[in-house]
Image 1 (tube, rainbow, N blue to C red):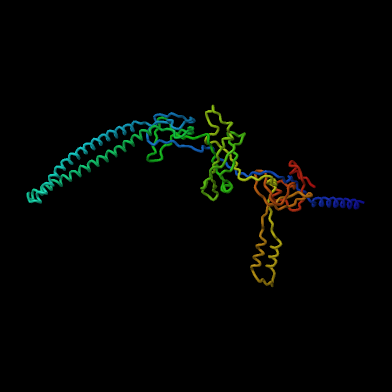
Image 2 (tube, rainbow, N blue to C red):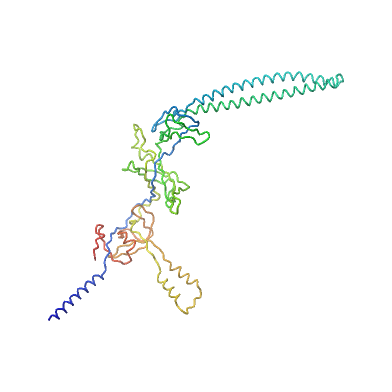
Length: 454
């Protein structure tokens, strides 16, 4: 009796084990989420970060060296073209000007004396020349001796040399006068340059020096920057765009600009300048190559922030900003979520096996080795873009051709039609796990990782 009971128990255990093994060996559906392919408008963008700066910023430096004795502006002041900004100590330049005036007066007096002396010498020369001509005639007639003629000739030649010397002396003094006049003009110019005026309308965006500090002039070197003057009503954002994205950016592209100081809104902009030369950061193989792009902030997008009674402009140099440059736009196109598009290999494995088998055969005569090479080329693994469509509880792999994309969706040019139910998650399953014909179960996002069995 006991033996029968043990046999029954053993049979039951075997049956239960068989059922469990069958259930375990059964298929397990993969939980997925889906989204229908829809027509949308897509704007492709290139994002970059940068700083706000004036489109035009003038560095104000002194042409002459010296101490700042007067400073008529402070940072943030608005000025107009021609306004006096600061003054350099003029004492040494006034002294130079006075000295040049005295030197010029002396040179003019010397020139006047030289001219008077020249007139006297010319008058004397005229008498000597007349006497020489008379003596020459007498000598030709034999009325005077050779010695008397030679004396008259020597006197004439000496007077002629005196005239030439006097003329050269006058020319020299004339040169001195002109040189001194130039020096006086330079001294007066330097004196005038001690007053520094605004070259344009704008705002004092940066003040580097204070009253009492000394500055170096720009006559012989770069000079000391005293302040910066900018037009804060015309601002731009300077950003670094990666070399992989720069080819998509063009002058005239529209942009959306987010400024940290105005986090609740976006401003409009337009690309005005793209650098031809790259900025390279780092010296290793991992160095980053960027190109500077400048985007003008369109005033129409922040007119409400401009207040005539407001002391400062809405944007200040150095503010942080994020820019989305709109490089392409496509309307009414079929789109799917970006994460729905993945890649799979399309390899002709049977060809590779066939070639391997052929290589291992003995006694096979190969007429041309190029035939093997051609077969091997045909067996190269090709990577293709695809999506997985949900059809009757199974994943169907569909090859697609993609276009532009934004932050969430990507254009599908070929492969699917509007309304197709596309598997959109989870990303790990789409990128690695899903295969053609695999059983899947559509669930809500909240149930995505619940492990429900079919």
